[in-house]
Amino acid sequence: MKILLNLLLFFFTIIVEAQVGVNTQTPSATLDIVGKTDLPNHFDGIIPPRITGNQLASKNYSVLQKGAIVYVTQPVSNLLGQVILVVKEGYYYFNGQFWNQIFTEPIYYDALVVLDETLPVNTISEQTAWNAYLPFPINPRQHSLSTKIYRLGTAGSGITGQIDERRIGTIGYLDLTISSSTPITSNYVMLNLSKPLRDLGFMSDGSVGTINNILVSGSPNGGGLGVEQGIVSFTNVNFHLLLWKNQIEKFNGTIKGMTTFPINYLNVVE
Image (cartoon, rainbow, N blue to C red):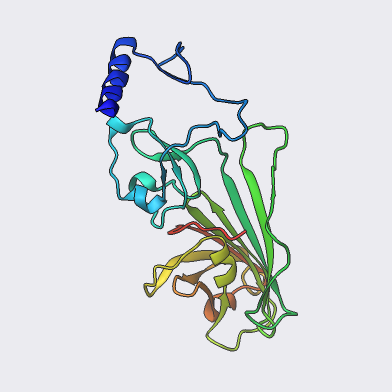
């Protein structure tokens, strides 16, 4: 009964005063909380609801909840709908349409894969760890850039160059700069990009086929004018990049190409 009376008195005070004070009898706003800063065992602060991204995804918020704040303890597994931007742990607010992270600037990830003929084919070595820095130090609000270098073995294939894998938000970018120094004896050369792509959070949906076809271009054999174009296939099962023989043999210089594709699950390993 005493608890009930206290609750009734509390809500009556809210209605009458229209302002609530915690540890103060004279609140100066709708909600005024005064900490106990002189008590070492009293932990001042406000803790909003803590929830995982998947738990948050199971809820459907409306404009009535616009302005809601939660703390997400784990990123969501599937970036869809209202939680499409819930890519990492942290504070999020609901803007009436999506959950957006509070107090953070975006991180762009860039993994450079160097094709190294001195290493056994399709072996991966990590040349550097993730290195985060601010590319524009004088700008107080900017993205940070996190970079890493891998070396991918191509011994015996006659292929050199590099593959630049980038992740900006929920979009992945794949840039190719590849040279073929010797004729390819098989129908295609397959480069395994599993390690660097998984470190960037690219996940396969397990379906058969290709994520995208990359249009490549380069100098034609014989030194003629113009450019030759071809297709490089990027499969989504084991993250293999297929360089087709009949396309690469058209080039005597460097072939280049770029594609973009969505990221299904973000979990950068740093």
